[in-house]
Structure formats: C-alpha cells, structure tokens
Length: 179
Image 1 (cartoon, one colour):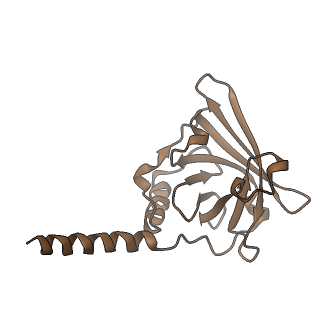
Image 2 (image 1 turned 90 degrees about the vertical axis):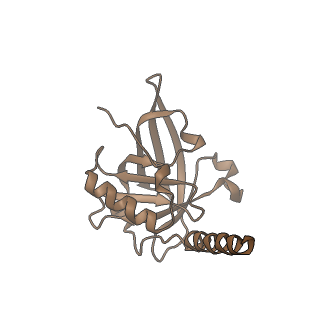
Image 3 (image 1 turned 180 degrees about the horizontal axis):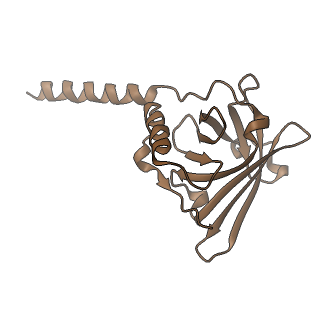
C-alpha cells in the first residue's frame, strides 16, 4: 500500500515539475518603435519593490541615443504622493527584441551583473495595445495596457495564455487605476 502511495506521489510530482520545467516563451518579435511609450499596469504578481504602490501604476519607455531604453515607472502611494523609479533597459536578444535586462540601480553600479533583471515580453497584442512581461523563474509577472482599463475578455485570454506558460496566475493582483 505504501509503495502504491509513493508511486502515485512520485508520478504527481513528475507531472507538476514537467509543467514548470516548460520554458517561458518570449514573443517571436517586438518592434521597439511600437513598444516604447506609455503603459498602464493592469495586474502584477506582488513584489517587494512595489509594496508602497497603492494604485495608478504606469511605465514609460523611450529609446535612448545609445541604443538602450529609458524606463520610468510611477505609482501612487497610499498617502497620495507619487513614487518614481528611473531605470535602463538593454536588449539581450537583438533578433526578436523580446528579451531585455533592466536595472534601477545607479549607473556606477551598472557593471554588476545582479543589478540587471530579466524583462521578457511574453505576450503582446498584434496592435501593441497590451503586453505581458515576466521572466524565466516565473517569480515576476506584469500585465500592461495602453489604456487604464482592459476588457474582462481580453484579461481572461491573457491570463489563460500565461497559465499555459506555467505561471501561477492565481497570484495576480489587479492594479487600481483611478483618474
């Protein structure tokens, strides 16, 4: 009896691990000229560097003359003040432009590899109206939109595709966007 239970547990563990072992797949191609601009955060996995954000989370991307991307993230804190983080992004995969590294550490720390984090565009609307960003460990995930709101049907379709890539989408927290 114990052997049967152990075998069953082992099989379940293998199935669970094979789903997670599946690679996170960035999109096939990103036109950076279309991707840059303003984005609203629709939902995210909770993370320590956004703990102070109570809503109105946005990201603004712009091309730099050195080929990198300027990143400006903003959010409203619970006391009503605005929090802003300015960072840099660099393309890791120049063939697709879908895998980047970003950092918010000062320039003088830019040479240290661990200050750069993966930023993979893993879902993207054909018309660039929404995107999902994550990374291979599935620890971080954001759903972004060009508008402060998104239809329930579009959101559900994105969540389904992210679930298929092994993300625990039950952890997603919707972002409050108010005027």
